[in-house]
Amino acid sequence: MKSNAAKPHGSRRIAVAALALFTLSCGDQPTAPSGAAAKPAPAAQAAAPAPPPAPAVPPILQQPIQPLDEAVLRAANNLFANAKVTAPPEKHALVIDPLVDGLTGVQSNATLSMEQKITNLARAAYPTFDVQPFTTATIAKAPVLLIGTFTTISAKAQTSGQREAYRICLALADLRTGKIVAKGIARAQLTGVDLTPLPYYADSPIVAPDKVTEGYVKSCQGTRVGDPVDPAYLDNIVASAVINDAIRAYDAKRYKEALDIYSGVFASGKGDQLRVYNGIYLVSLKLGRRDAATEAFGKIVDFGLASKRLSVKFLFAPGSTQFVSDPQVSGQYAMWLRQIATHTAKTSECLDIVGHTSASGSDAVNERISLQRAQYVKQRLDADAAALKTRTKAIGMGSQENLIGIGSDDAKDAIDRRVEFKVVDCG
Picture 1: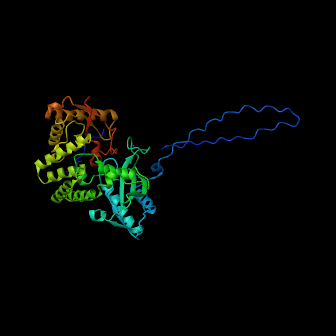
Picture 2: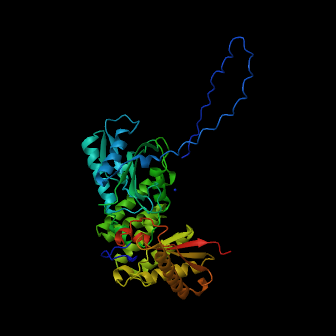
Picture 3: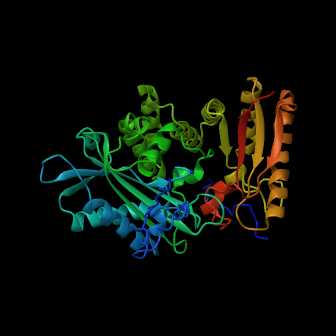
């Protein structure tokens, strides 16, 4: 069995309706021979119902599975060629809000590469679009906004079970009208794709999209042309541009600049987002501000408890219930557990502690290991806050709820090897 523990990566961690149709036709009755007594017409036979039609094939499954570069160009060409932008200028300002994983909200080397290919295509083949950076200044001009998701799916286009391909979803939103004006989809092969998260996402301790990121995903995956953009996303688009600046500063190791930007977003009243809380924690840690980092992680815990779910990337040693020994990876785990225990103990909440593993290995082994790891985390929490002993329960899910599902057992699918704290009814 492959290990479900992450291999250290430097200091980076990490849901058709079918149409029923039938036709009933009746032929002419036969005529009796001349001079013969007319025979009574036979009793009408009840027409047998037509068999139900086969379920419609989801549009994504009508797409061929192609190498990533070809799939990106297929989706992008369909997007740009069918765009229905109503404004009259010869050139439309086009801004790309960075593409994300459709389940986790994570940006990776793959999503960054896709963005670059889409940018190059727009500049080379679609001169009516003027690609501009994603900033508050460009957003103020109400441009055409491109968003996109990249998600592993099964042969039935589901985000569970054995994954067969990546689903690419692209959408154009006209910020003047607040509506979707074009869509583009494609399927890409699983091979040759670098899902390594970008530094901010690799280092973030918590794995859960907040309402703004969820609004981004809904605007791409849950809309048709003419539908409105999700309001939670649209109302926060300016703040998202600022947060993007902060993430880029963090990725470039400009930690003081990143902290200033995060602090500014928080002060503006738009900072109640997991991306901001994660960011403040990470840059505080990088700047050696341990007390500020501890306080920031406590706010992350409060945010997770309020949203009823807190997914934490605890990475374990191979075949073990012990955390990985690399201090660059697990050095903050003790503090994380204390903050989770302390902040939960102050509430009246009960928690299901749910362990997960990657897709490698047998189901039986993965379920056992995931349960053992959840039990280990429970013991640590109970030791930090005795009041939680009767308010927590360990559960093992194995690989049933993988978010990535590729079974690479490295930084690319570290999110699959997580422990979730789900707020449940104590009754």
